[in-house]
Image (tube, rainbow, N blue to C red):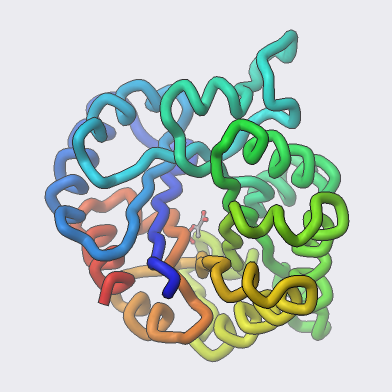
Length: 251
Ligand code: PEP
């Protein structure tokens, strides 16, 4: 039985004041949630959120890290070992905003995935197709290709300590959501793809859906057999809305 996970990706949002308000609402809204709940603040708020989460069941994550796990001369970057110092449980790797806008390629994604795992943190590997790729029937080629980049480089056992997030690029921050059937089809394909290498790893692998998840569509999405929770951007900035999504995942 896979415990659902809902992760809030706060992206480049927030001030110390707004983060404090969001946290107090969120800790209330997520109390006694059956799903595991994670929040991923901007790095400048990591210390603040780390302290606020102490004693709660909500866990901390980061949105990115350097390709090398250890500290070193790499101006502006943050390493996975530094994130471990804040007890980060998860780190996103390969978010589409980084792939599309910052030119992050599969090779860098693999290095980050490996850096995160080498520090004992769980990577959340983000995969997803653009609208043009969906319209030209390339969805599975693209998504399974992104999964294969990690599988080929690190082997299937790497997925026993990882989470995958299917996030169609056209659904991120646009208000457009994949239908529950569209999402389920891709989630099932990812699981089958991993199962071809190791059925047990595939069965235990949590695959999250991301892309304009809201309280109004969460129940239907999370009811699908291969959708194990969500990666939530915009809606995670509203404590009540995020709480409702977390409860939907726990039902
Ligand atoms: C995301 O950034 O991972 C995301 C899914 O964003 P949104 O929920 O705003 O579409």
